[in-house]
Length: 115
Length: 114
Image 1 (tube, each protein chain N blue to C red):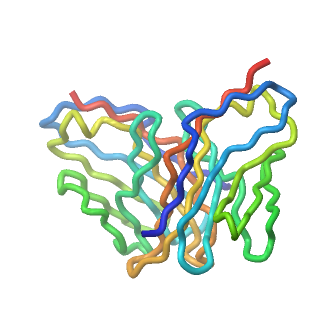
Image 2 (cartoon, rainbow over the protein chains, first blue to last red):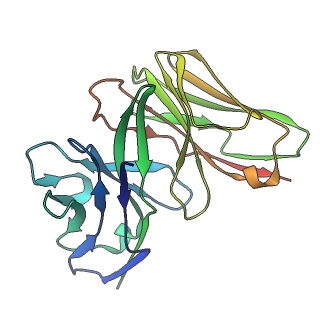
């Protein structure tokens, strides 16, 4: 089955330090990978998506993601964390089925940025 | 306009009630989605509409009934729900093609079933 996994339930980082939120994937063929962020009591906001051939993808709010085919990973990174980055982050994979496109999410990682 | 608007924001209903959730977008998207999300959990896909036709039903109980009356509107009709159906219901929309297009999500309807 095609899926994504987020091994960390929570990541804590000090403001100003770099942050990494991990995601690994299990997909046959070209993966359609995404990162979304969710603030409390809100819907999901798109951060970035993998584009075939670009191993470093730049997205919204200073986030970027590194695609590594040999490690089947798509980790989310930011050089300098802000307190306002504290939120729930989801890695997702877009699956093609006979009925249409399905976006399936990982279990989520709670990011907490402290002063 | 890059918004997906969901109404109501909050809904409390009894197990015998009938209610509807509404979703609207004016981005010209021809794919629309319903997701269910429990607190601190990932969203779970319920239904997908493509060109106003139901294309995916993730084995959702019949007490949830989706409807797509036109390309801008998506409804979710609720009847005889159970307390375990309490959750955040998220609507989303996207282009049908290309297949790696992002989804735009609404802020959701927080549903409580008493």
